[in-house]
Every structure is written in structure tokens, then in C-alpha cells.
Length: 439
Image (cartoon, rainbow, N blue to C red; front, side):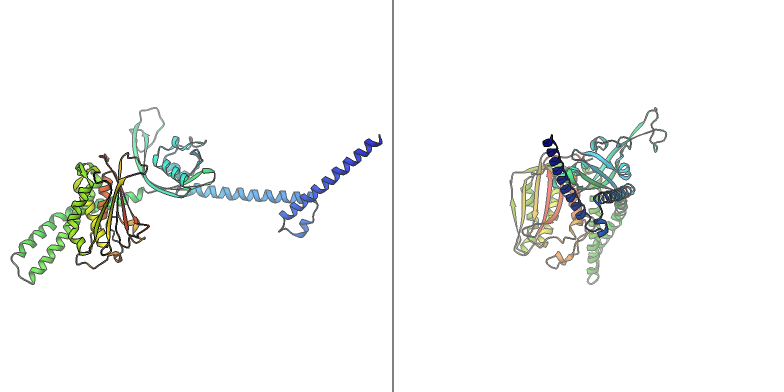
């Protein structure tokens, strides 16, 4: 019996000692956690310290909940769309602007679903995947097509009645910016670019109408000037000759703008497809420009398979290479080389067969501020890039815009940058080898 009580007392003593050490460690932990608290609070009993810290944690949790709710309300009311997907591309949430832009049914988005079930947009899916794979912010612009079912009597209103509905396909220009988030999630901000697109189209239509009206009177002025040249003597003859040159320059500007309009509106009606050997085409263009190149002792190097051919409009491709090589010669350093490199594209694309064409000069390259606008209509870069003075007037500002439209009409892409090694201008063209139907 004595042994039992002795063991019990010993066990209780050990338990009390362990409990004391635990309480001391817990108190020490709470004191260190409350390091910035008043000394009076730190010296409180253990139970009071625990109650105090639990109260502080609850206050912080409520504050975080309020901050989270404020941010959610801000995103919900934002004039720009926002959506977030998980690692499986399931829609975790989106604000009202995103629902309006992407025509997401609010009832279907209440529970977690695959984004592709709610939004049929390959471009948006591609933006999300590229953001997740690169773990960097990505930007993409595209035209989003969606279908509405409306009443034939009131096409401006959607209806859920049992009467027959009319199917309407509409489109909207969007710009998406994807950002990587923890756990392979991705957040996407979506902007409505339709107003800017419509403004640009309205400007182009207005200018196209104006150029149509200008072409006939300008041609008449040029013909009158040519007739006067035969009858006049200097100095009047020189004045009329200058007038004729300026008139012809305006006629050329009008024709270039009309070409741009036709290429953009009806590319399949403008282009005349045939099999074109790239090497032979480049050589014929270089022969045309060779007298200009010899003045600066500029040479051309062609790297790639000389048997490569594509289905394209020969005259339009000549226009592309004339413009690009002429610019390369003008801005190239004296005695240096221009490189054209042709290869089969190794990038992933919707097009099965592509040819990549790189045109690299040996100049100082583009100004970084000019690169985003190089292919815009009527844009002229910094004149400091010009190597030598010229007696000819500045370009119309449409040359590279026409180049871009020709490439796009063929179903290809074009981009401009500076070469990382030599620093010269680098224009990269991707063209499909087969005919591409453009709508």
C-alpha cells in the first residue's frame, strides 16, 4: 500500500514538473509574440495572456476580412474585367465587367466550372497557359466572337420565351493581361478595346473616302503640269517641274492608302497567288536596289535553303522586300552587310507549315521608343536614325504599314526589334507556305 502511494506521489510530481515547464515555455512564447506590448500586459498571468492574445488575433482576423472585402468590392466595381482560374483552369471568380465582356451567365458561374465551358475563347485560354508556363505577365489582343439568341420582333432584347429565336453572332475587341499567382493560379485583367477599334476604323474610312476624292483632281494637275513643261522656259519650267514632282508624290500617297484599304478589307480579292521561289525573288529585288547599295558599299548575304518556295502574291512580296531592303540600305553602316536568313519555323502555331524570314542590317537599330509604333500608318521614326542626308523628301509613313498589311493578308506575322548581338535593326517575318483563306 505504501509503495502505491509513493508511486502516485512520484507520478504527480513528475506531471506537475512537466506542466510547470510547459506553462513557462508557453508564457515565454506569448511574451516573445507580444514583444511590442506594454510591460504590464507581459507580466499578466498565463491565462490572461492567452485571453489577450486570442482577442488580438481575432481583431487582426476581422481586420483582414474587412480589407479582403474592400478589395473584392473594388474589383467588383472596377471598369476593367478581372477573372481568376486555378491550376486546372477552373473559374474561381470574376467581376461583373468580365461577365459583361465575355458574356458569362451569372447563374452558371456560381459554382466552380472549367473556364472553357463558360467562355469559348481559344485566345483567352492561350493567354492563361502562356502566363502559367512562363510564370511571367503576358499580354494579348484578340477579337472575341459570341452568339446571342434574340426575339425576331425585338432583336435588341434577349428573351427566354418559347417562341423561335434568331441567332446573332457578334464580336468585340479585347485586350487581356495575365499574371501568375501562387499554386499555379492565374489572374487576368480584360480591357474593352472595341471603342478604340471603331475609332480607328472610322478614321481609316474617312481617310479612304478623302483619298478617293483626291485621286482624280491630282491626276489632272499632274497632266496639266506635264503639258506646261513642253512650253515653258526657265525659271517657270523649274517651278512647274517642282509642282509636278510634289503632285506625283501626293498621287503616290493616295495610291498607297487605297492599297492599304483594299488589303485590309478584301485581301483574297487583291492577292494573286502563285508559287514563288524566295531566293530568286530576293535576288531580283536586290538587283533593283543594287545601284543604291553600291554608293554605301553595302552587300547582301542570303542564308538558307535556296529551293524554298511559298504560295503567295509575287508582286506584293516584291513590294515587301523592296521596302524592307531599301530601309536597311539607307540605315546600314557604310561597307557593312545586310543579312537575310530563311528557315522553316520551329515555333508552335496554328499554321502547319511556316517559313521564317529574318532581315538584319548592320546599323544602330531602331529607337526603343519607335518600336511599338513602327508599323502604324503615317508614323515616322526619329530622323536621327538616318545615316546620311538625302535630297529626296521623307517617306509617306505608309511603307511599313503596307508591308504589315501584305504579310497579314497572306496569313503571316511581322515584328521588329534590335538584334541582341550586332544591335542592328531586325525584322522577322513568318509566312505560311500554302495559301491561307482570310475572311
